[in-house]
Length: 195
Image 1: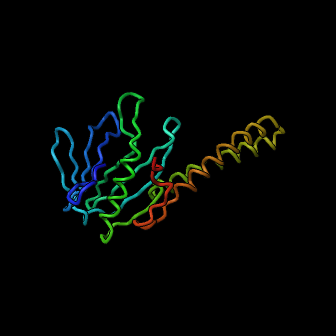
Image 2: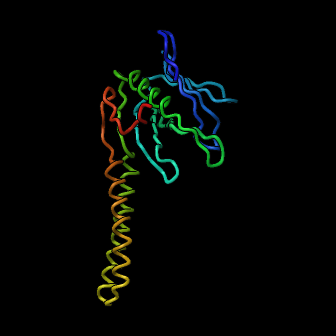
Image 3: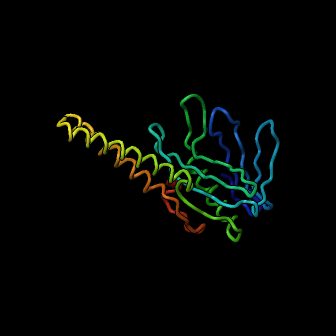
């Protein structure tokens, strides 16, 4: 992220996966410029940005994985992450640059008609609820079958499996519930900590 003088342009460089090239995002006056090697440059005016969605989605291997999804007027989406792909199983955390860029993007979008939300999108969120409820129903059937047959080992095993899995699903759904925030008050848990 570079933003030192009055004419400087906030920028961020990252490569999310092995299947895409490194992209350079620049917050210029007319809009967001996206540069990709071999593909040239694309200008996205700020007024065509309909929404910014922030979320923290830790994985087993990357605990601090933050994402910013920008929804455009034509339905397209841009996805930025604080993790830069280096090679097979290797990522570089660019959290400080990512956080500074996302804050600058929010400042540029103030006054435009973009919505600012945290968590999963509504469809993904309710799909996760459906999956969680389906698993809960399946477990209830296994518990009932174990109780009716007097198979206490099955009953005990189902309970031992349900408690940690159920609590993880609940915490995931609680943390990733879609809800709005103000662009001048980004919730701190949605951006990497300043180091």
